[in-house]
Image (cartoon, rainbow, N blue to C red; front, side, top):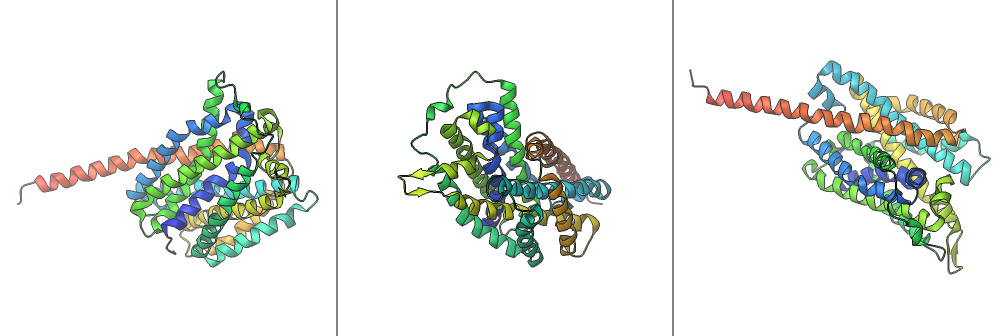
Length: 372
């Protein structure tokens, strides 16, 4: 397994957290909380910090990367069973990224393009990256983040034109607390995609410093998601934002700075494509690596081809219905993410703590026992 630098892992985690919310979180939170959608992001600070602590605790108290740590702490039988479930959970994120990419292009860029051909453009580069190895994939993701992330934020700032009305964030208050809780739960579920750090973290040069990079990723996620949610609302209002398919693309299409900078939606496309490639490649790798560990295979690369066919066929079946896509993004996927990527790792914390406590008690008894 290749070694990763901490900055490469930082870029990988930032991509896994920020890409999907950048595209769709504005619409989903506007549907749930209208102009108060940004409050759900602020409300997710404590759950996000808790997840960072949970992942770091698992990393520092495990000798094997995920899903091997499941067998280490839960036993070989239960660990392999749960690890098998995680293979399909990671694969689900792969399919989700493909479906989201295809719907984005078919609804905004190339409406008449065949779905299969469109998917080939994103699957083939990721396929080549995985066949080359994790180190090459990490370098590509690092380059993408350093170039595409600043550009993505700049495109949002261009959306603050003369028609921007900050009063569209008002009035504050008079919102349903259940809706706010639903929004916090939704945002927290996408924060839990940071779970890939459990697999990739042990292969960093300085794993003990990962908590700093994880906190930095979480902070940048909050900033980018806040901007991606607030700017469409102040530009269009909550009602129009909630009915648009991809509000961020409409921001780019409507941008006009001094009658000089306009028609920059092609730049938005250039930002989205590398981002989707990154999250696809990372979760595709984690899927294959998890299967390698669960089934005891010698190399994960033998799984890249079969999983590529499975992902492509699944995406083709799901792409035509964009309404069903948002139902999955808002009501189905978050439950899976919360249960598998947040609750189960949190359950492992007391299990590990009890094991460490018993080991310490056993060691202390051995030291206290009189010599024979």
